[in-house]
Image 1 (cartoon, rainbow, N blue to C red):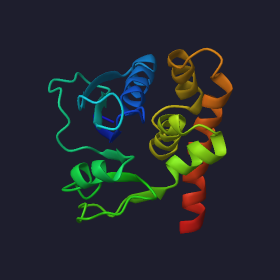
Image 2: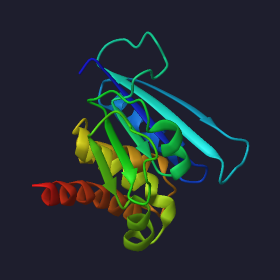
Image 3: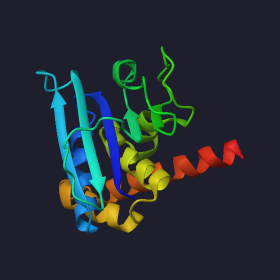
Length: 183
């Protein structure tokens, strides 16, 4: 594996910071090295939000994502800023409402109904970040689904275990359906 770089972006309130924290925690729980960093605007909700995660089976000497292997954008503004100049083998994951305004540099693009799934299938749009974790788990196969669920349940409020487990599964299913349509 060596070093994998992840970039998650969206709007404040979509939970991309928590997504990164859970991803890094899962990596550490699985015996890997991980580093998570974040930046966001001054607004509590609605401003820009970005989180980066580096996962490696070796020491991590440089703490910044330079060429992400995986990029997730949950808002149009995030895609406009971060879904550009990607390396050819990068994987870009977008909510299906997003329209790319520039060439991203990669053709490995997943357009998935992340926000609609969180809102309509799970019943809470706030679970879009957890749906995204299921998507990342299924695409990367970096961890087992059970390991991801364990980390999610460690971080979410008590009493929300069932809804968050369903959100992970919904993300996994979105990727499986995407591949079925493509084959």
